[in-house]
Image 1 (cartoon, one colour):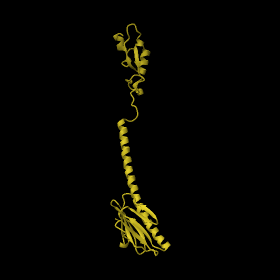
Image 2: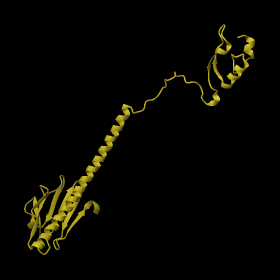
Image 3: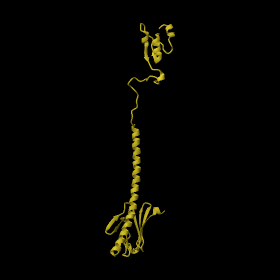
Image 4: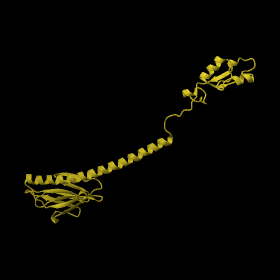
Length: 217
């Protein structure tokens, strides 16, 4: 292209001498042009066009057509291991809490069951019109009443304070109930760790009560 023709072209549309081609070029915008080779028509010199930047498309992507840099979804091995570790810690904490709750529940139930056995023994003495006895083995952690033997939960200690005549030996004692409802009286102590339950039997009335020392403080 001659220098005069080049100077006559608009700045936005270089490479076209035809007025209609120049107007069309200015309407759509030209990204890149090349100068025509020898013997080549000037209108064929445009090699690439792009839409105006006002349409918001911006610059062309540097990646070849059909190839885009994408990030695959999912988790890394380190993330998965961290999640598994957190789940394991949470499960262990819940397991310990549930285990402690079950142990405490068994201890509370043991004191209640012992109190119920004492009341049942007193009722049997009143209904049957003869003495009834509940016997305790502090070494083995069990008691016998009405022909049944009951063992305390593992780890629970048993103690007895009663009348001297009701202490069979160093490890065995008993509480007797009479037909009028009275008893020889005494205190049975259940202990697990630092916690204690006192099962008291009144000698005059034979009434049975349970005191949780942790609640009484």
